[in-house]
Amino acid sequence: DTAVSQTPKYLVTQMGNDKSIKCEQNLGHDTMYWYKQDSKKFLKIMFSYNNKELIINETVPNRFSPKSPDKAHLNLHINSLELGDSAVYFCASSQATGEAQPQHFGDGTRLSIL
Amino acid sequence: GQNIDQPTEMTATEGAIVQINCTYQTSGFNGLFWYQQHAGEAPTFLSYNVLDGLEEKGRFSSFLSRSKGYSYLLLKELQMKDSASYLCAVRGYDAGNNRKLIWGLGTSLAVNP
Image (tube, rainbow over all chains, first blue to last red; front, side, top):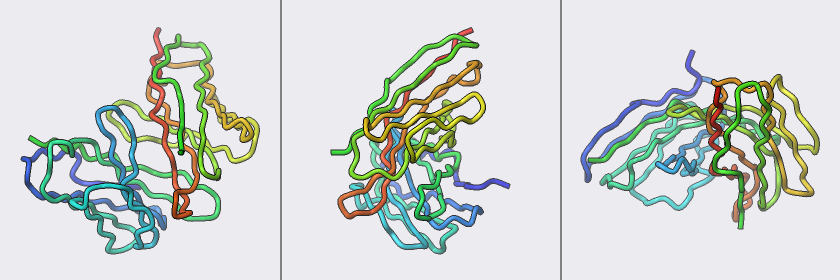
């Protein structure tokens, strides 16, 4: 029944490792997003995909690489993890129409770098 | 530049009414959203305004004035469970003319008994 699901919920790893976070939505939405929310609670857009095509790529290190195999999935791979990458990463989706549509968020992945 | 301002923290009493303000300056305007985020959880959609005026949804109402770049979220009959962060987000356009949602930092509301 979960609309937007992301795994894992918690990720604890060492600096320098490579890790992936997966996201899937069963809402039939066309657009998916990755956000980073740091300790100050600021929600920062990282990437946005519309029908598997990248439409927003904010200024994030190229260690972060999104991959969308189909419009229901948007995964995030992170290379050479750094201490500053510790945050909560949220996946979200919305319907892409002319009118603004609300975004539906996953439960978040809490990434801690040791 | 693009900017959204909202108070960092607010405190209110159970049963009372509270108004959370949001002012914005964005490139273009295509709607304003309010989201609620409880500690340790994901943001959830509360309301959407694209035309001037008040939208009411049960205990929650949201108001928009596009000419003033201003919105507020009104919460009535406050309950303890309303203690959360309230995020204002405006849909504008980025430098590449792509629609983009610009988020405020959120207002942390504490409801006391």
